[in-house]
Image 1 (tube, rainbow, N blue to C red):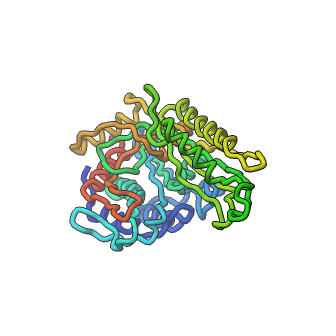
Image 2: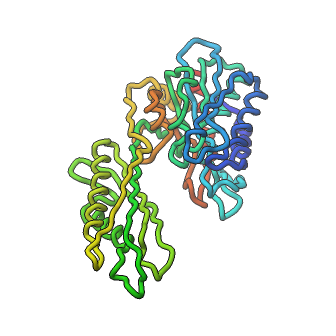
Image 3: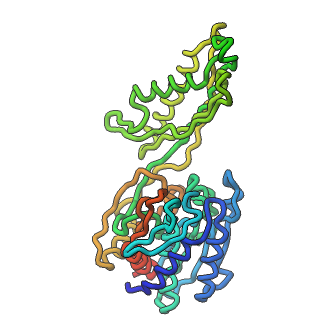
Length: 389
């Protein structure tokens, strides 16, 4: 379906230029609401939930939900994207460079993740409203705090969505790549407690928490539980992502916090990876002793951030996404990804969403770019989907 391409490009440039990291999405929310209101959407169609009040960082707004009445019969369709960006993209100034949009500064990311997704949805809905194209009932969902653990989708008040039957999420690269499944992830935190002592006078009286953690990490690495984890037909990944401890070189480090993650498409195998982390740290804590025979201790805690999901090829949302991309002259394909998406939590809420790309490249880096032709293809696909063709 043909769209106003210049308006779509201008819209994504304006959205990218808005500051709005995780927890600070109000300006993005207000831009979206102003744009839709100007196009004739009643103020009563807008609602906010309280996801921000339940997230670890709170935040200045909850998810924004917009419900539009249909002008023709058909099942309600949900179109969604997240409003926040990573910290590296907060001060982005977008500039056009041929077929690309890039950050003006070499010190920032672009923030097309996921302002391009928001722009795709806005562009599609504005085409319908301005050209008076018939469409089924629609729900638009703009989530918050995706970049810090899918918090907006996790704490979504799903009862406000209006029970959509077909759901679509824009957040990714290739418009023809339809993501219908993703991994689950659990964070493992190990609080290692050693014993402080003077590192120069009586180091033998101390127990260095860093040594305990190092032994545990070496154990995991040597036994194949860190990095790419493959055991028979089961596979997943794990990573030590954060370590914090110590305050002086002349003190045997008494405490160290280690945060890791485990991912897999199998809940059971992800659980096994987590258990191996527990066992490795517990073994290491017993292994290290001081001159008095005392050993270290470790406190372990787990936080499952999202569960894996898989949408059947026969699902109505998958068929509709394939049909829309095909109608736009493309050859779509379905895939499974190893990253977390808002779609993970949408599936958990009972609203499995197909995730479609919108031209994002090299996200979360200073090399981030938005491919304009791919972005415009995404806008056309979204318009087909929203029209219920």
